[in-house]
Length: 187
Image 1 (cartoon, one colour):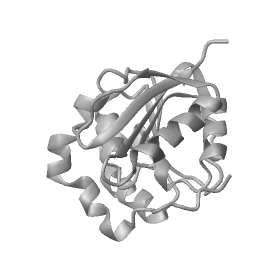
Image 2 (cartoon, one colour; image 1 turned 120 degrees about the horizontal axis):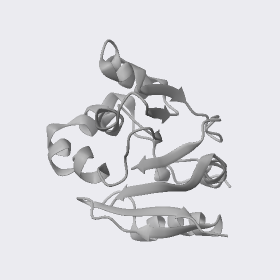
Image 3 (cartoon, rainbow, N blue to C red; image 1 turned 180 degrees about the horizontal axis):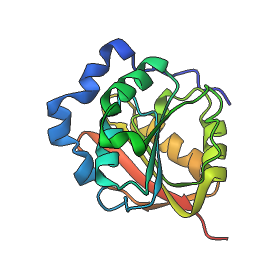
C-alpha cells in the first residue's frame, strides 16, 4: 500500500546528514558495534550521503559487503565520491532502489534503516523484500527521528513489521530517535 505522507530528504540539503554534530551524537561505531561482524553482508537502506555506510565499512573487513541503497541518484553519487580511491571501494556496493522494490538478490545479515522508513512510498512491499533477503538470524535495525516522525507513525512502522512476521529483539537508545532491532519470529 502506498504511503502518501512521505517526505524525502533532498540531496541539496544532505550536508546536515554528514555533520560533525551528528558524528558526535550519532556515532556509527557506538550505534552499530554490537551488530556488525567480519564477513557480513549489510544493507544500508536509504543510505543518503553515506554517513552510516562509511562508518559500517570502516568497522568491517574485506570479506564483508555494505550495500549502500537509496532511491536518489544524487545521494548515491555522494557515497561514490567518498569511497573512490579508498580501501572502502572493495567493501561498499552502490545500489539504486526503485520506489516499490529494492531490486536486490544478495542475502543480507543486517538491514540498517536509519531515518528512512518514513520516506518509503511502499513500505509493505519493501518489508516483504527484506523478509525474503534476510538470512536466518538476520536483524533489522530501524530508527526514526523523534521530532520528525511521530510516535504513532513509528509504531505503525513496527506494526507493519510485526504483521509480516518480525519481532522486537531490543530497543537501543539513540540520541533524538526512536529505535528498534527486529528479527523474524522463529517458526
